[in-house]
Image (tube, rainbow, N blue to C red; front, top):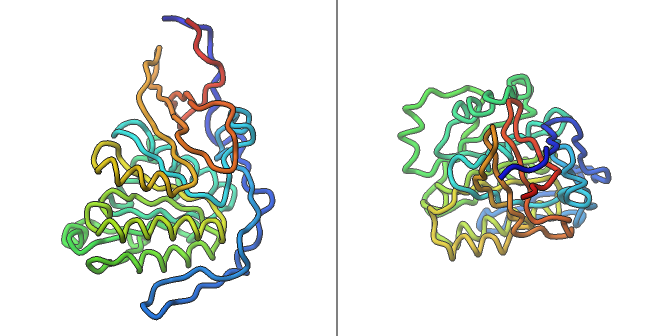
Length: 288
């Protein structure tokens, strides 16, 4: 049913990174006897807020999304949950924040093509090292990856069976460089024991609280056991669930805020439209 016109705000116009960010060089990384990274150093950094470069997010949420946090983005294929992370990281990169993007089943070229749909060009940032793609390869993916054309700027982590310690080590190094991150989790959940994946998520959250930044975990909906997904939801700082919505003349969607620690949002659902330059947030509710 028709409603009154809704105001929309597109990407990249009001990025607000953490205003009280503490320098990262004060943190240290140490290793246990098993070679597993542990987090040591100065303790939790000061909490800030960010709108991820999406105008009016700060108003809608009563300040924005907390930094020093890990967010689980979940949705069915085509609901733009990965696009949301890519847009936030792209806007952060434009403001001189470094980025690392961890992927397994998809190559960096696949992700770059998706980003180019919205004219998000990170080529220069890849050249100077500000944006790093890291391919995380369990043993069963190595043959496929070796037969795929490789971008020389793409880095790789060859994982052994039954252990994600190498990924943890790399993550700590990247956080000490002041990077925000994204991690595609689905293939790792299919390839590694439940306890190993759970430990990785707990480690990710602890590192974010101590070393700062914003970190996205990407997970398609309906593929993994609900109990496993719910446990991951209980560990992270925020859960954003993406779904389709009926639009008038363009692709639209909704983001349900299932969980958001350290802030009380004014709304629980954010409506967006998909435009040429990314997701545009709507600020006027439908009527009718």
